[in-house]
Each structure stands twice: as C-alpha cells, then as structure tokens.
Image 1 (cartoon, one colour):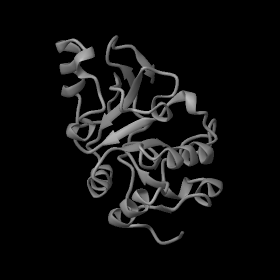
Image 2 (tube, one colour):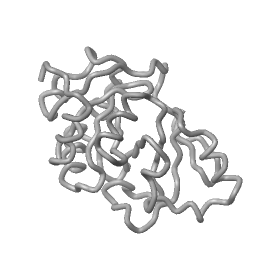
Image 3 (tube, rainbow, N blue to C red):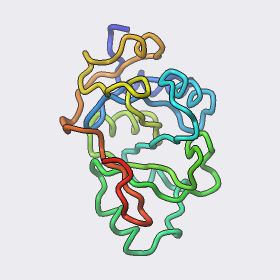
Amino acid sequence: MSTPLTFTEAAAALRRGGVVAYPTEAVWGLGCDPFDEAAVTRLLAIKQRPVDKGVILIASARSQFDGLLNWDALTAPQRETVLASWPGPNTWIVPTLPRVPRWITGSHDGVAVRVSAHPDVIALCEAFRGPLVSTSANLAGEPPAFTREALDPRVLALLDGVTTGETGGLASPTAIRDARTGAQIRA
C-alpha cells in the first residue's frame, strides 16, 4: 500500500465497498460509501468505534446531500447559518430524512455533515459522485493523524488504499455544532 491511490482509483475502490484514507481540513480521514452497510460496518470495526456514535458525512457540494437532510426541520435563520458556513471546515448536525440509515446516524435523529472547501476532499467526492463517510483515520481513543506519515500501521493494514494529498493545515479537527440549537458538540 505504499503507492498512493489517485482520486479516481480511490473512488473505484469505494464503489466496490472499500475503505480508504484521505486528507481532510485538519487530519487524515477514513472514508467509505455511506449507503453500503458492509463498508460502514467494516470502517467502524477498523476504527473500533461503536455504531451508536454515528459518523460524519462529507461532500463537495450541498447538492450531494439532496434527499438526505431535512432542511424543513430548521428555521430559515438556522438553515441560512449552516449554508453560509459552507464550503468550509464547519460540521453541522442536521435532521435527516428517512433515507439516511442508522449505521450513519447511530442513536441520533440527525447526521453530522460538512461541505468541504479542501481540494482533495472535493476531488474525491466528485470522483465518487456523492458524499462519503468521514471519520478520523485512527483507532478510537487514539490521537488523529495530521500527516500521512502519522497514520497508524494497524489501521493502514486494514485499508483498501490511501490517496495522495495533504491536510488543509488546521490545528484541530473541525468543530461540530447542532444546527437546531447552535450548541457546539465538539470543539
């Protein structure tokens, strides 16, 4: 796995049910097809993360969330606040429509979502033609990897590949806020 995957190769692996590592705004992330239950279950097993916590979905454009998010459950000002923050390193918990499975939402009635401005995330989501699961590429409870060299060999051994690219240089993972209340869930 020493040869990095192009975004086209990574997208093909994702469509086959693969799990790949890719750079995000701050840390390296693990991604898979959010609608492939086996892929999400495998990603959570690799990470040793319980399904009830839910995962983040990341996209290259708001339109990639069409049919997934219940924008009508938000007031106009709440919706405007979320949309004004994108694209960018802003993750929001937004109520979902019934199409979003429990292996994504976990025990929650919303899903954490972000429209990224990071060029590598955009390239990967565009090549895949949809949103991806995005969770830090580390074992649960371990520190996240801010560089490709810091990726845990135990995680790497279980992946279908690692893309090219670099993180966006943020000092910490993106904050997560609740779109309904504005409350910060993760700093």
